[in-house]
Length: 304
Image (cartoon, rainbow, N blue to C red; front, side):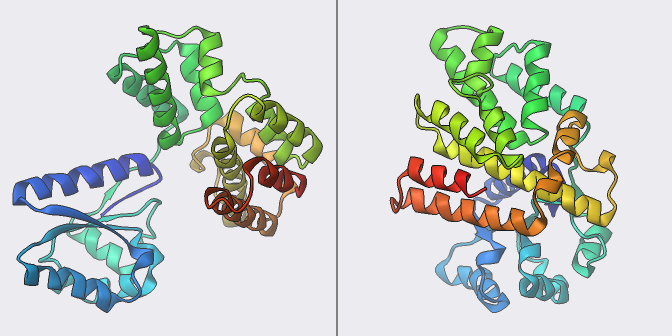
């Protein structure tokens, strides 16, 4: 079992372990999402029925905790299921009180990866950049972490974006102006002003920034991702406040945390859930061609 608040590392290590087992046993990795499994019997029939076709898999099961029936079944039948090669991955921290996870811990097959401080993530980003031959300045690295937070998935995507640019330009370093433009800190229109206006519930200002940005490039998916990130972070703060979790355990850069705390009362949890659902529905409608991207995003922004 691989889990923890650093879901980039936990996923990477789980995937690496699954691939190593597959190589050692000359088998294929089969990835399954627990929340897509209708009932425990279907899952068990799947892994037991594989042998009927003279083939077997290394099963990579994601988000087991999202399927209570399957979780309970695996817990109740833990000993008999140990014969199968099943790699489990959770994208968040586990509830250590659950019987199933206590069994995993007892047998020393549970591995937790938690986010460190912002300086640790900054060092990680620097190391990842160096692997691609990128030499960020301290200013650039600090701005990456402050503006993108501790989400390694987003950081690695931005590092990849920089790598493609530098490769095309046959360079190893960026000027600060190039850095800001590539990462999106300075564009015709400002993505951060857009997000700030949205979370302060100022739709006209938000719409103005959106029109500036969208005049030069198609970046609706990026804007949707940034709005989703802002709403999710606000929801996280609401839950942390409700559960009495101290700021030091939230896993955000202090600068980002204080800015979000100043805005969290602009949205109740019900508001956040409503706008996240509307954003999900909008994204799906855009991708399916049911609504024009600019029209859909404009209407969404105005609804705030």
